[in-house]
Length: 426
Image (cartoon, rainbow, N blue to C red; front, side, top):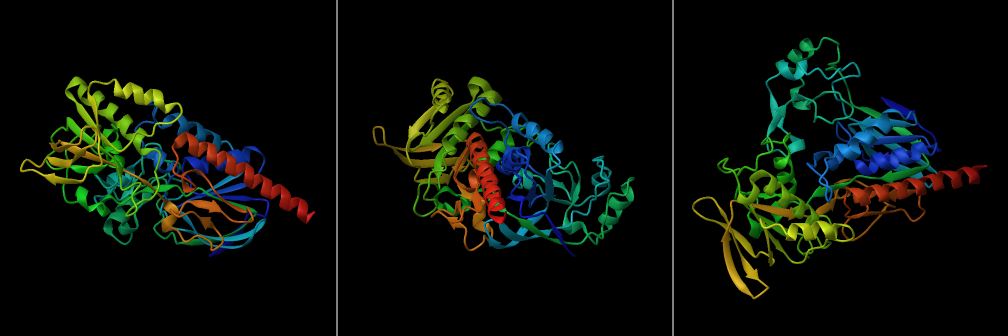
């Protein structure tokens, strides 16, 4: 089924993370109609997966909860989840966008009671914990999920579990007959806020990610530290479930490297500095964090946070690009390299190694329109005529605060496009 909605005065925002939500809200609160599409079942993107922000160490609810309240109260934003752009035709001020919407198998009647999840036994790897644990195939993605509606994994359809979920629902929210839909949108400007994805650490072969279980990524560690995460907030070694108290953080894991990511992702240093404080909170003076770094890039107001971490007696710094990681007979990762301050070789064992992996634009996995310009790393610059724009970490490696600033700027430029093209038509 194909349905046509929106007009040339509408702004399309692709991506429902913190940048996409910001761009949509800023444009809507300036009086513009917006269609916000997100390919997953819920808004929030990777910001919703953080345990805390730096430098204030507050929780994501600080920003997301406010935006969700604004979104619920704004009738100018039409939200489409589980939706992806298939094609974009046209030019500045007059785009026709084809959007595919995957079936959720749960309709608007859903009250979030969880009876469907209780009725099924099938489980899938939990994408919101990077597969570190399992979740029911009928599930609410996470506590802050918006819309607050359950979703049935497609693997459930056609099984006895699907029928059990339907029978358990007292409000008729389970719709196993849902089909894929196609929409055509007529819009005047497109903001690409498709966000970022973690670089594949398995490609950094000397570090043994995927080979050594006690080598994990910074995004996995972030979920591990969260009380709502896969380990209930305990810093546990994947190999044996033992508490990790001596933890190494390796900076620039794949970043600033011609063989991997050429760019600096700008957030990794601060993310690791923040995560050393998780170790202190978990273990107090008994915890030990060692940061292996090329240089620390803590700019602007983050310098104070860096200095605070430097004063922390549980944190030490080794100026070195780790050459390789091995594993000893106890399952401990052993880091090999040269400390460039004194040029001492080291072979140091740790309980756990956390790779500060870089940001890769999510757009690298998306079929963008041919006229969208990207930089050498795949970040979106926009189109030459200004009708399509990049925002947030889709446009550049940015932290949450700077992503919000970037998205606000993109919304204003999109509004300008709508105003100018309306004037031209008149």
